[in-house]
Length: 139
Image (cartoon, rainbow, N blue to C red; front, side, top):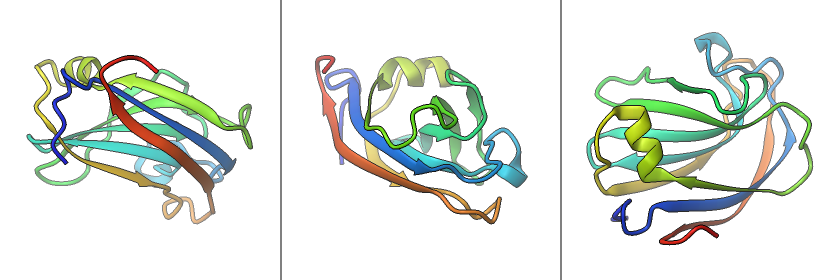
């Protein structure tokens, strides 16, 4: 993909989590599991990872990079079981999030990935995603 994050700065999606990974907390390597992640990859090998974490507080923004030559910053959009089994709409200004995370203007978006992690805690997670869209206006 090739998305200009200033022309289409708003990423919106819906997600529903049915099961959180037991003891998941992205802030520690041994428990770095999330029920849902939407990862946005930029041309400079920087990544924003929007997550639904089991325990980290909503609004937490923290470096999560453990991969050589790739920089990942996690943004906790949802946390804990309060909204389980409900479709939750999300919308993020990816250009503003990138600037806050990396301190510079965002290059073009080159990829998008949706995933679940439960390997570190050895537990299970279940989530669903819908309508992942970049747009020029808030939706």
